[in-house]
Length: 359
Image 1 (cartoon, one colour):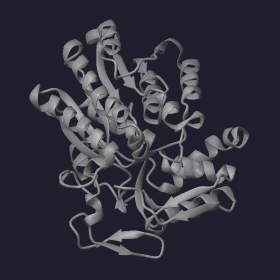
Image 2 (cartoon, helix red, strand yellow):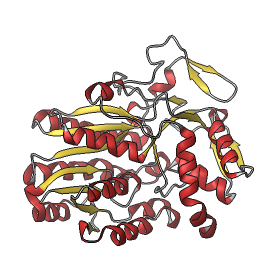
Image 3 (cartoon, rainbow, N blue to C red):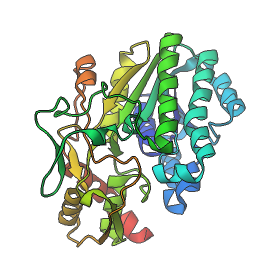
């Protein structure tokens, strides 16, 4: 029996991975204690997604409601499945800049200590497993804001002559910049995952994501930009733009494309702690103002938003991922959702009835 273990299995990336690997015939062991509701309140709850998975997948999905900060609980699960675990996808996290400031101990406990607990459990119970970590572009801190940017009508854009004109590569320094406490805890986890790959020669990888999006996310104001924006567009909920005149740019990748990248690594893993930037790149990126305009076109409704000139500390003014390294290592990988319009339309079509009723 081949086991895929997924932390945060009821979240956006976790649930997409759960469906994918169960569909391939794997038994999926899900670890998720719905802590997203603790972070963001009822609208952040992932219970609906867990129930959907359990109803749809039946015996192919085995759920464990445990906290990754508790090593003894994790070890019990790892001991149960042992060397049958061939893949660990770690997506569980505290994902918000703003929330981290409220409770740094919980933020670091979940993001850093929880990751260490998983790596140690793998080392003792299934050292030949592939370990995939959903990291973040926030490990680069606010260093992207030092790039030479040009102000256009609806967005900021990088100088076309700059080294990173095709996107920010893994060569960008992670040092001597402001990360936010969230960015610091994720960076600690990122370095740990690399170190277990290098020191123990394990098959570990960090995917430093841009905006990961899709229809199954429980988007909230503090996390899940694209999903939450479309939710506000459908329901008429007021939305706040924070800083940069709404011209800040993000690259957006669909959750199914994230999972196909994970699977490419799993089927041809590399030892030694690989790192890849993962995002929509030059094919799929958008500013806040542009995303609002697209959402208005899709919903046929005027978007209700206000502007605050106070940017979030450590926030990126322009971030587009350079995927060249990953594409060179895995040339068979293709991005199916290669335009932001496709992603927003998918979120709208799959959620319009549920959201219009729920709110």
